Image (cartoon, rainbow, N blue to C red; front, side, top):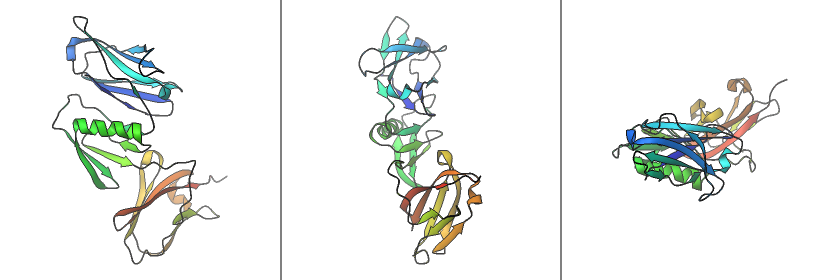
Length: 242
């Protein structure tokens, strides 16, 4: 049966992407949605070129994440196929589907610069779905060769780090007592988990970074590694200067 992927390109948006395995035999392809996973589906869009091997559609609606989505394929001879209904749930994925499904395609999933898994196309697809439905983590990829798994940090239950924190004037303090005995590295991330800079080897227990190093105010995420293993993933907030 045909299938599709869901991801959230922004707040209040849901992107549906698919691979059309029927090629030119597909004469109509429609996106349908419903609050119910089994009933009351209605068509919200029919694509202009249903025969394209790969395509997608973005729903821009504050309630878009609340719906279940499915795709209806109409083939020559009036055969009709529906995908299973799917809802964008807890996690977040940003993936790109290939124009042609290759069963030999292998995707390497990284977690903190370490290989977490190497999966075939269909196993990767199942893995991506599990991130959405069973976790609040993020899976980011620009193609199906590599992907990065990011841990979720709950905002409502945020507990400031005892290792990295801001002081009264807004500068960032790093305080790791055994930095001279162990091998510590730190990665700092900005918006969309983009790396701002990293400290490859912390050789002093105490270090102060000027807030100007981060260019703007707001939330920043960091990861502390001890001897190559994740010690802490947390965040801090830099106040805006007036």
